[in-house]
Image (cartoon, rainbow, N blue to C red; front, side):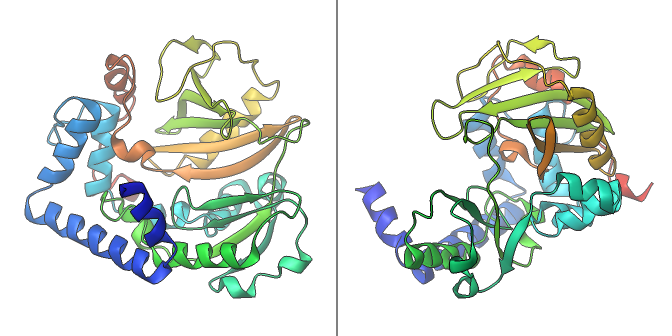
Length: 310
C-alpha cells in the first residue's frame, strides 16, 4: 500500500516536490533545534553505534561531521554535476580535462527545451543536484512526455536536505543530457571510486553490474584485495587496470583541494572518463563489514575546521 501511494504521488510533480520540500525542511530545522539528535539517531540505526561528533574517529563519523560543519565554498561547485566541469578544467588544465570529461549534449532548466529529435539513440538524462536522478536511454526507447515529466519532478525536488547534505542545497538546478559511455560489450563500465584523503588515495572501491547482478569490491591503492563488504556481494577476482597509476594520479589531482573527497572515474579500453566528486558517501551511514574497517578508514582523515583557508 505504501509503495503504491509513493508511485501515485510521483506521477504528480508539484505534489511530490511539495511533500519532499516540507519533509526536508522539517528535518533540517528539527536537527538544528535539537542539536542534530535526529540525525545522530538515524546514524545509530544505520551503523549500529552512536556517533561522537566532538572527537570523531570513524570514517562515517567524520562524514557526518563534514555535513554539519564543512562549508568549503568549493563543495557546492563540485557537487554540481554541471559546474564541476569547470573545476576539472581549472585543476587539470583545459586539454587534459577535455580528454576525460564525458561529452554533454544539452543542458537546460526547462526539460521542454530538450531537442530529443537531435539526440543519438543512446544517451543519459540526469539532474545536476543529486544522486539517483538519472535515466539511461538505449536504442531511442523512451516515452518523451513521461521523461519530461520526470525531469520536471527532479528540478522541483531538493536532494539531501533532510540528510543535512549542505552542498546540494546551494546548486542551481538543471537537467543534463550526456553521451552514454559503454564498454566493448555495450554495457555500463566498471565504476572506480577513489577515496582521497589529504591528496592521497587510500582506498579503491569498484562497482560493476550496477543494473544487473550488482557487485562491489575494495582494494588498497596498490591493488591489494581487501576482504570487506558494503551493501552488495563482493568479488575478489577483478583485474588491475593497466592504467591504474594514471587513474590514481588524476583522482589525487582532483582531490587536492579537500581534506576528503571520493573521486569517481571510469576506464574504458584504457581511456579514462570523469564521473563525479562525492563529498558525503552514503550520507555518512555506510555499514562496512567488518565494522572495524570504518574506524581504520577514518584514521586517514584529520579533521580540521576551515582547512581550505590554509
